[in-house]
Length: 111
Image 1 (cartoon, rainbow, N blue to C red):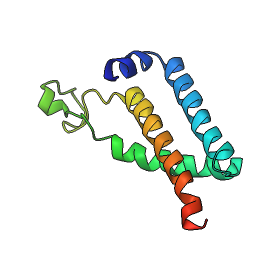
Image 2: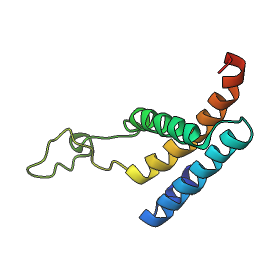
Image 3: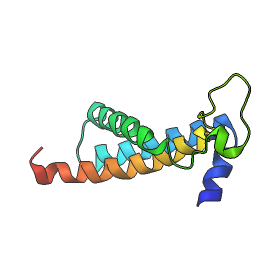
């Protein structure tokens, strides 16, 4: 699965396509199966995605000092290879699962 995500994150367009398709499927499930409105499903997904993005960003980060490749004039603690496309895909996959779980819990909570 990890190498598959790396392959999908190979270009900007494939990353955007994966994010749009997976997000659309998750919102469609929340809307059709769990009776959320489209606007509510999109808003909830947006909030979940951004929160999870900030949780996923630090994973696997090595600073320039740790990797031994400090770029002159930059902060030595800055990430050497942030892998933002891969993290966007992982965030989308996890956020989609969280959205479906949250939408399933809403009726149990009386919302």
